[in-house]
Length: 214
Image (cartoon, rainbow, N blue to C red; front, side, top):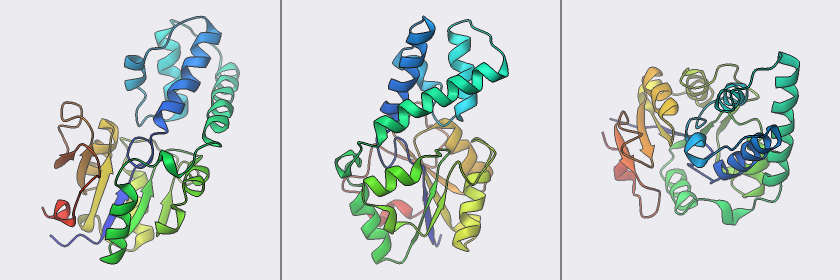
């Protein structure tokens, strides 16, 4: 198969900013009077901000009106933005930039496919924004994964067909979105969680272009 483009999720694939989401959600739960664990946080991976808030409130057995929910979501986001404003190149996951260079040298296009509305801050702060041929994030899409919108739009902006794309994802919802978009999916992380992916890697260290052979 001739792969012409690679699409990457952001949190947990390129950078480990997932921990900052967790810290912000935990801080919010604490303010609301209940505990939010790392295990709870697994349920929020690849999920939109408002859907994440609904899960968090269900964990705390809380219900509230829409206006309050929006205020809480905004508060969580402000904390998250504070955390990521201090992010730098050291936050890139091992091997990611080397893999980007390899893709560029071989004229394979690169796109971001993330639900994050703060992706540009992270890409600029880590110094990798120049590698991307298309950036599809929460400012361009309205549907959260597992809806394939983010990846379909990515392929469209890159000018390639779905069949020519490979998606790198660390979340089950993201793998599902890639498959719905008719793309190959490579899971980054746990084989137990990402068992629907076509291939699974633990990270990008030492990865060659052979990974794109299907």
